[in-house]
Amino acid sequence: MLMIHKTDNDRWALPGGGHEPGESIGDTVVREVKEETGYDVEVETITGTYTNPHHVMAYDDGEVRQQFSIAFRARLVGGDKRTSSESDVVEWLTRAQIEALNLHPSMRLRLDHALQDTGRPFIG
Image 1 (cartoon, one colour):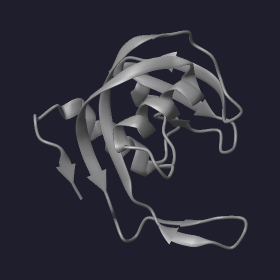
Image 2: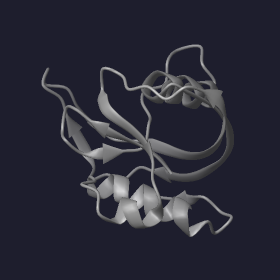
Image 3: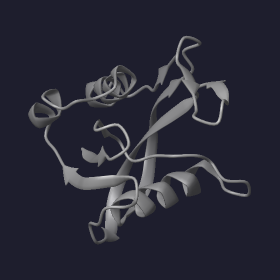
Image 4: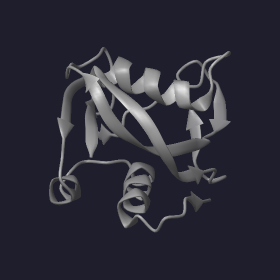
């Protein structure tokens, strides 16, 4: 699993970010992974959608919103590993290594669902 160590909160996370106007969701995944890791990927499938009404994000500028996320499985197709302004480590990790990481509970949930590989995305 490709993971990044975030510099803003000292936690590990999957690469990801916001959807830009004019992008397909697949284009967003490809762009965000490239920006945050240096790697080129091809999207294979959705592993889950996350819309928990209790997962509210409060930003420094006073904006508050309910988090909505879509998690994907993607395949590496190229690129070279590099960090970004958001991370200080980019690493391919095993399931056992991930178990010991400092993760936000919502990120651990996404990883658990992806690693279950039920053939169906989690809808929640």
